[in-house]
Length: 130
Length: 203
Image 1 (cartoon, chains in turn blue, red):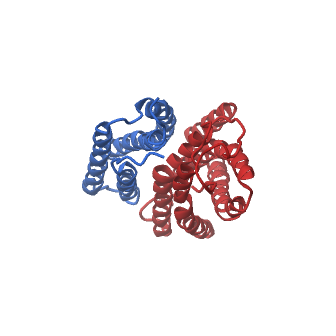
Image 2: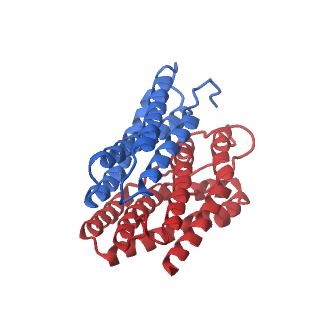
Image 3: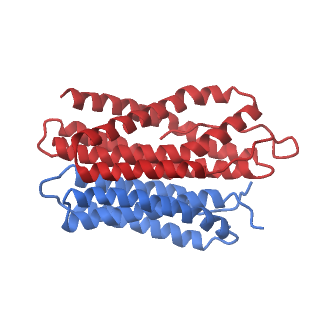
């Protein structure tokens, strides 16, 4: 089993997902009336920053099995893009527009990228480089 | 969502590693079924009719809750007492199917549930049950974070480990601790979901 030091990708992923969910709840609980986007935007920005931080930290790991990572993450990305697209369709179909739709779309984007990243990381960390 | 824990075999990987059947990590034969279900979900949302939305929300939500509670509190402990080869065989047959079933159920439940709430008005801030609905958002949010960021990556990684010629029991044990640590939280959230949804349905 690999015991090398790795960045806390999973832990940061949990926090990032929690921030996205909190932002979504903040918006959903205010609908259909006036939605204050201040808090959701801050939560989204923090979540996206954690995702980028995760990517940067992971990119600096030496000897990481990138082929295994991409082999898994690309299919997971496809699956989660389909799910995100369905959720996006629900919002658009309901007439959600403007800033609320932008925040929800970007939140789905972070979700659709970060989950595959976590899946690919968790698989690849235990796959030896040939 | 809960999945089944596979306690690791004692010792380290070697010639005594349990034999396991060959398996597909994602069962390709199930993908068309998932595609049909998701297409029907999109059609139901586009039609915006009460009955198909209620069907998707109640059926998928009920199955999601039942799967979580059954796997976490019935099948999981049973598996823990099985012989190692039996655990491995059950896991390699069950977990790939769950990789398709659980995300599909969750997507159907949430997407149809939101649309249903818009039709019935329960998601509106002025609705008498709005507090219960917001509580359900929090419950689903907790389950989503656990499922997406913690359990699903572990689920896939365990299957990849079991695909190896000599799976390392220590890796499987480490990954499976996630299921043990989160089973109680997920179970509590699912029971809370039942309380909230029956309250909202009763009015």
